[in-house]
Image 1 (tube, rainbow, N blue to C red):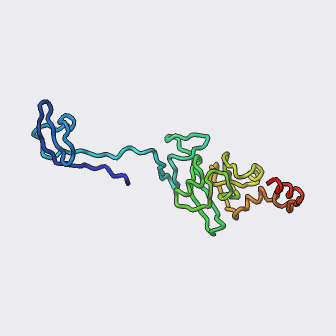
Image 2: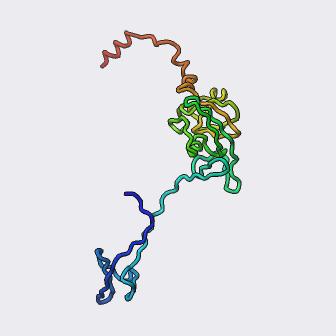
Image 3: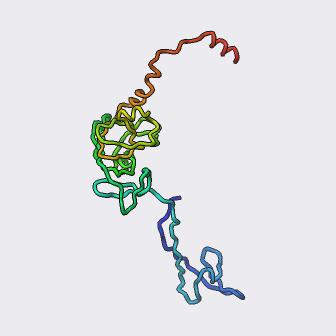
Length: 212
């Protein structure tokens, strides 16, 4: 059921008494003691009750600041920035080779590049969002990106200037370029598949099938 906004509900009521308690009947509801309803005799013929929406869990809020957006809740870098000393922001330029467009936007130093781009309605390639694949991989043309959670690329490729936008924090103005699909994956693991076919061992295969 969809949540309802705060509303004021009025119910018609009648009064009657017993030996020790005064009751009112909230038609079509059951009779309730007057002390519970907190309505005194002589009150208007309508009792008002206010229904309030229950508190929900905290949700991610995006606030605009200068020329960029900052997510209030979300990923936080190793260094914490308070409201009195907000994180510095950096200009990020992404050359999307697949779509033939260039995106320029501002990202706080304590926010992921991909998340902040999406908060500004900028579409960039991604898949896992956790730094475990290479769908959002880019090659850094200038600037620096801190990416301690980037498990999807090796230290060798990081040193060569590759980064993952989904878990990357800008530490300066940055210009990057998206990569062809699976390009970074091939750079990491292609050498293992380029050694030629595995030699077939028919004798071992016969033994294995004979055990079944």
